[in-house]
Image 1 (cartoon, helix red, strand yellow):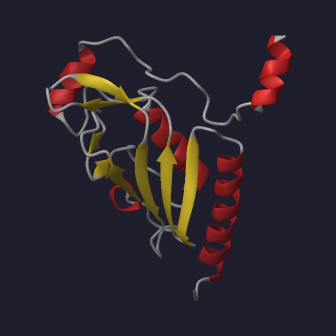
Image 2: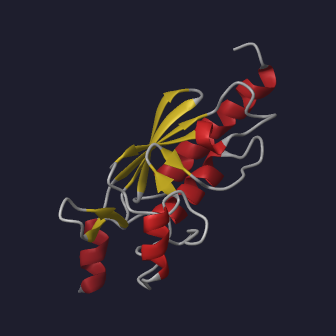
Length: 167
């Protein structure tokens, strides 16, 4: 890598992203390279089943890529890619696109992860200006949000500790 500033930024993002993943039982971070990641979220979100019913799901995959000009220009549609499941049901997600709105150049990896988590769990959504009109309309007519209220940064206690406290 010839850009020392970008390389330093990317190394910092890797370290901070892995630290956040270590403090969470709701997401994993799989580095593919210094500038590419797969974030796997284990939280409640919504999908549309083959029968048309909107139901909860508990695993979502997102690709994150920091292009070489990321510290100067950030296009959210290049940085984020929805990977799984393709039947996700959210106004701001139309696979492979995810709309976080405008993101500033050099937005940190952990900030992107939090924003994606808030989208998946319906803590943040645009029912008036999304990527899918049908889902926008559906969201305006429902009040079951957020579908997951757990904080991203937490770690489940050891099972033994839980058993001791229960006694």
